[in-house]
Image 1: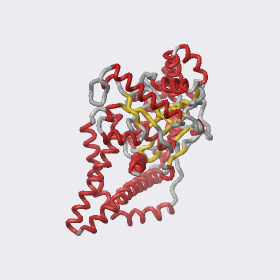
Image 2: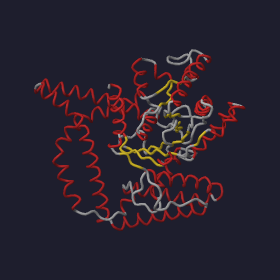
Image 3: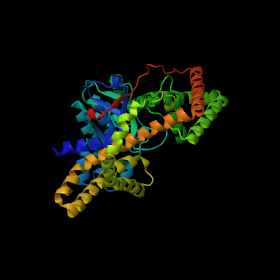
Image 4: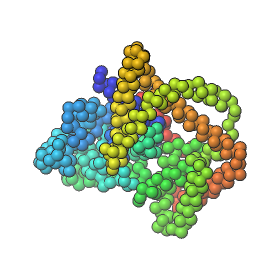
Length: 466
């Protein structure tokens, strides 16, 4: 019961941290067969958690052995299906192997457990880059995932029907509270064609399958030569998605992948044209920033009906006192979590989301306890107990209230722009359409497909999916 409650609470917190989790390519998910998902690894422990939320099933995965150094950590990681893998860099350190031979022996024990789980029909998530990182391109892949997959099939004389599925994780802002996440599921492949290769040369077979995994990840992971380009292309994609008024993450990701492929081709063959489009995009970005517009599509929406405001404003006003109480109870520990994260983790951005999530949860809980004790001392223990019981509801309430308030502010600000600065709105819309036309023409001229109105959209996950 405690294990189930711990997992439920952890997944709820992840779902709270990320406001929307979209899945594109769900039709590529295999049925009830042994499966290894191979993923990029941009966000530490949150990566396998998000896969479990998307699949709605337990997933076993490998995690560095140094995270299993004490009984509490070991208990927590094992709840979520983590198995220890021993790294060369950790030899001689606490939680690491004693030497190279010990590392090899311990990893073989872990790989044997992986094969046993796969024989039972389990699902595994493996990160062939070997470490979490924030680089704009995939790191060189290691062969561990391929070796586990091939050895598992070989143990069953190639009758397991194991499927390997590439999955790309794309975070809108991976360290930002209430941002969005997209999982892109690529085409699965089986290992039937590699039986003879494995019998002839196990290492060469592992390298061949690793190359196949890399090719699969290339189709689902956005990559660029530098971080600036990797940040800029999705923004450009969001402004120029063909025939879309409210592009979601899946559609934006699909179009961004097309733009990246176009960029690589046009840079080699027509750099002057590339610079013209890039300069047009830079000027448009500067213009949006100057007038304070985050989403130019909102300017092109029809004017809002007054009836939409009739219920929003009174509800916000009536619930404001409760929202204020929730704010006073939660804002301090929420901000403190960010300050402490930067102090204890100044360099590794891949762990920022995990530390904020866990640290913020602990600090908020401690704050609730302290606040309930203070209220109990001043007003009586019944009031303290009541406050502590209502604290989660008040915390969630202020979160939804603030999001509703922000949505209302944006709605009114865009409406004000349309009503009072119609010329500016028309100019911004025209500039966006001109930029979209220039981008679309470049994509078509270099042989890439233009997204149509029926392009597949991601499947949003609501609270009912957890």
